Image (cartoon, rainbow, N blue to C red):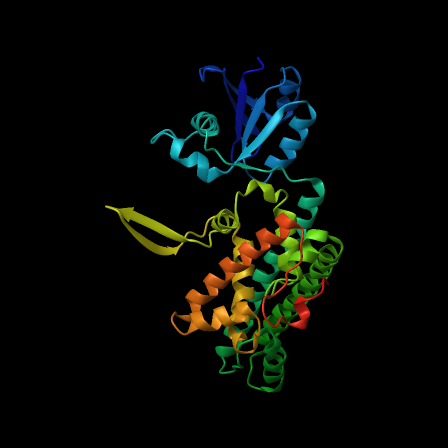
Length: 349
């Protein structure tokens, strides 16, 4: 049994698990469906083996539990499993077999199991991202409601107070619509307060975590981005090089090669979407300040702006920032700008 690999996948309802076991020769020796309450007792009765789980929201929890039973647990990314799912057989049993086939490949890439502390920090980031989206939706709803009665203000969250003043001073604004506006505005303010509270927790993590402190020295990387990368990337050694790390974040162009000719397209946008979004936002702010950025990286950015569109330069700079992040995490160093470094990048926060 020591050569047996057990593979299971969760159903959509997160209550039923499909077990697919193979021996050392890759031959299926067991196919079984387990309910949630049956999973741990089942693995307690098995000899130590390799358990491969498709990475999902609850996968890290089960990986820690099964690892505590003496099994070797590996998490595999869903995109690595998809090519092995047989067409026309989309069910849990077929998915479990596909996970097994994907994990048996020599080039298979696995996701590190996150600790409780990592998942706790990532919960702050997930909640903040959700509230930011909700605040944007509420702000758009307020603008849309006021615009129906001819009241508009320039874009920006900070302009909502001006919009509120216009609504209060407009005597023709219908009373039912006024009550709706007040309720939405109150909800928007409560959401903003929730965002501030979550950001305070994220900043606190960025200040006490050594990796996050080093990452925060990179131009364009703030405490939120630094905290997210530090909490998400548990083992930077899983990435062979800076190029592999940037590729995992989806910041490299797609390749369409044929007949010896290589054509590059748009970026792949694979991997962690939130890290990629924050890096692009940070790169955008640095691109607009490139004229006053006095380091070698600033000169590189300005030279690229002379030849390429702004959006392309932004993504290229985000790619560069990801590579720098890999180097700092690998070498356990802080960022030191070449050339005339800005004061903000010379010391660790």
